[in-house]
Image (tube, rainbow, N blue to C red; front, top):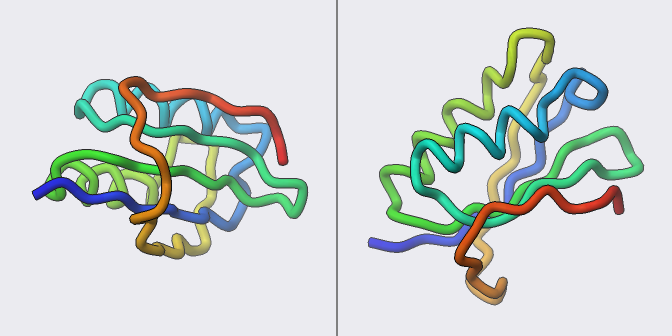
Amino acid sequence: MIVKKIISIKGKVQGVGYRNALRDEAKRLGVTGWVRNKKNGTVEAFLHGESTLVFDLIEWAKRGPALAIVDSVDILDADSETALEIFLKKPTE
C-alpha cells in the first residue's frame, strides 16, 4: 500500500547533517519526497512510498544521524501532497 506522510522532527536536528542523512536513507529505502529546515528549528519532511518503507524511514527519523538529538517526531497524513519521483532537499521555509 502506498502512503504519503508529513513528519515534523523536533530536537537538535538543524546543523547536524539531518537533512542530508534523511535524504540518503530515503534514497536507500526507495522512498520519495522532500526534506527542509523550518525557521522554528524543526526539520519537516514529506515521505511517499510503500507503507512499510515509509514507516521504516520514520523509525530512522526518530534516531536521526549521530549528532542529532531527536525529542519527537509528529506524523500527519499528506494525501493532498503531490507525489514526487525523487527525494529533494528543499530550502528553509
